[in-house]
Image 1 (cartoon, rainbow, N blue to C red):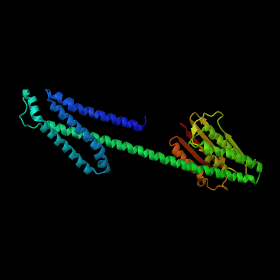
Image 2: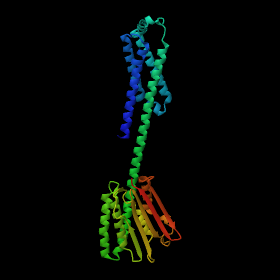
Image 3: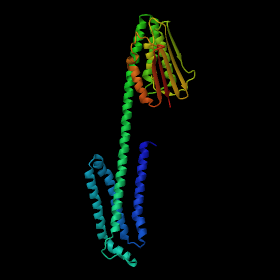
Length: 356
């Protein structure tokens, strides 16, 4: 059952309970306490009073509270509430006169020493005022709570729409960012080896099929994401020299779970962007580990200051957007440690995701 359906059910039960209690007060408790044989006019009057109370309940709930109280027109609300109570009180007195209730009730109590004819029963007046205040109070409380719950649902829906729109925007930025970076690499290959560049284009087309079609629902299988990273690494290796060593470790058997697509890619891209030297031996270590529902990505690469004076200032669109995606999709379910080891001249990334 949805939150809205549950709320509507609870509200309906409160309405039913309210009218059962009120009906008991008017048609059960009061007649039982009187302990006399009551004329049929009494039941007519009680029915009319019950109808007035029900009408005032819903008039207050549908008009007075939404139009005045919830729009900060408190003075007008209390003015109309007092007018409503006075109108019910006046109609109650009118029913008494029309049905000749004082004479009939005097006759019913005659054997038990009734009050003098014409003497006002102030207890009944206070009881009626209390019941009217109770009905309006319950009506106001239910309407205010419903408005509060509706506002919460609206805020949650707007926040969800905002998050969905932001995620779509971030993914739309990451995709071309990855695409253009890869095209630049293939362009460099065309000047070195035409056969290798053709192989790279074929591999890129397979990767783009994954990006454009397999990730449209906002999630991908872990096995697909690992395969995508493998393809990316293989594509990058086509242009690397023998001085660069790339090691990629992944689980032999993957327990397939859904994961945000391309969530690892910017970290891997950064390693190739900042961890390779054109003249010096360099290495990149990329490891994906799975422990039940916990996924770990570990990356370690060298840092070449000549090509990247300040790594933190050159995170790029892909990595910046990925950090935001992690905050939106895995809030409270991930840890990310990115640090530079100056002594060892290495940069390390350790990302832990809880996929449940």
